[in-house]
Length: 375
Image 1 (cartoon, helix red, strand yellow):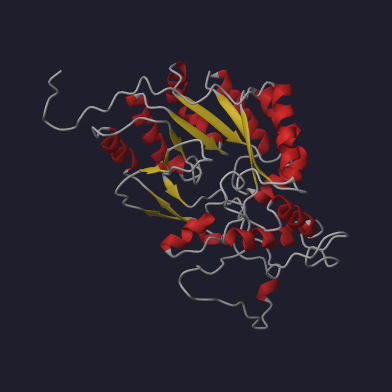
Image 2 (cartoon, rainbow, N blue to C red):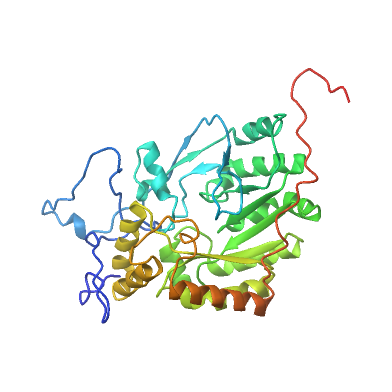
């Protein structure tokens, strides 16, 4: 919690972090508040009414889910530094509440805040499986691996009840379509009955994101994701079932979790991971202020140093969107991180997996309706 000796996060060598006033955190939530939606032109200001409410612990924030009637389900990109062309996001927003999540600014597109709204006011796409089946059946469809949950986690808590991701995986299994998964959730184990047979045909890759082995840090930074040790168990169970599994050490937050790079990769390899990746902290749009506020709230004595190192990675800025730099950073610290990562992968046999899953087994879904196939 914030200390009186360093209310703005000053340390002995760095400038103080400029952030909003420290507020009591919401239990089980990552963001400290709801910044204004950038394009609406409105602004809100907290005012002390003398009742002392600012000193009280706010009540738990309930999660609401709105059903979204999407017209299509596959999102395509041509970014040179993203290793997939197609992705599916069953949900908008994410209850895991990771304070650093680069997807938070997208909530402004539905006139909601990238802060607490992002992790408590969610949107689900119940027709995702049917939409996927229709898109895969189109004559012009070209098969390439689909990244499941490229923006928000496809196995976040609401999936346990809604089973939308499960329906998507069932369609992918039926059509033998290759796909990849990145998740922080142990819920992916539920679908091993589908994943294991697909793995035998080289159709799936799973990466489990492990940001820290420190339970305290993980709880503060990713409040509703699985505990670090539980994620390692998930890696072990996927590997035991024959599913190619890797670990994502993402994001690397300098002066906060960067020292854990080797220990996380070692633990993941011991659990059965055979591939690895990493991403350096990104602070696009509202994420910048949310993350600074979180630093001041939870790590006031380190806040200045963390942001100073972030600027070193970003050429003096706090965020850059340049291809080739936005994911791994630039400069001496970025080069050192890349070298540490390379050596750790060599030492623990994390050879980045076996490449992309194969597309050669793909079979378009059978058309639905009274018309029979000729052959």
